[in-house]
Image (cartoon, rainbow, N blue to C red; front, side, top):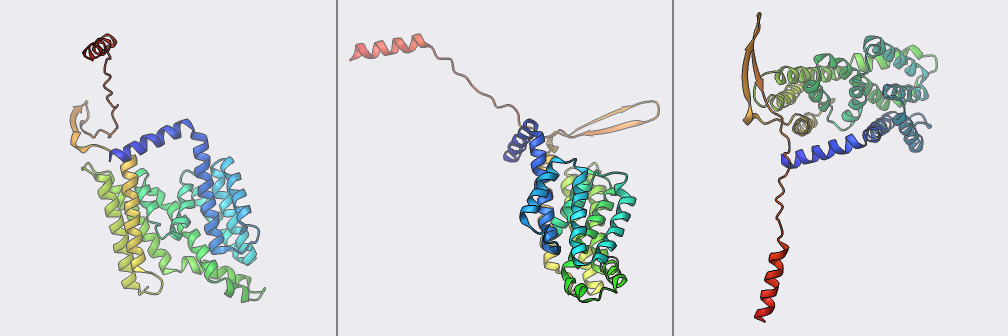
Length: 323
């Protein structure tokens, strides 16, 4: 724990000194990873599949306002879909418009979750996002979690069905649009995944608000368990043996919970051994307060020894006389 806290303090100092550059660097890495994942699944546009172009776009996004990053990623997705089939791009535009009207016109605060989810789906650990959001936000963040899942399943469908879409005639535009809608909104795996992630987020939020020791760690563990139970239940009940790998779900959940533990230790490090309770009241209520102090590294004590120069000189003279 002490080493983790030392790393945390060092990171805070570096961030405070170079906040602007650190933020820009993190945004660059996030956009870069997102664009490479998009290119991996839907690399239909030769322009936005070029690694040099991807790096340039990520650098530009690092200098733009943060709200623009998600819009740039959505536009790149549309460019890839248009290169695959204009009708697919049109269907994606309709989905993005609904996403904007439902959520993003009011707040871009959690657009980071939308950008992270496709990357974490690619790494098989999408559970990280709801575990973290459940600890730091409210259940309303289920909405950006769903939107991130929609984007991933759209990319996955484009990757798996590219040859089929190209084989269809130019006059079957409505069919192509319908195929994209069905691939997401008629997909049992999509609904099962969204329900599992939403349940994990809700469980984490409910438990971490309880006044019990180690509530955040218990919440993260319970969220991971809820995800595994729901995915396993859907796997058995719906017969999704070909679409879902239970081993991948279990391993991914364990890794996500481990990431959650690390973030909890860094962000929410508290010392439950020094918990204090207090009580006070006003005219209407009696308040019972539980105070848990945060863990912090105390200043290191340095013992400075005083050197007596005269005493050293006397000892040297005595040594010479003995000789």
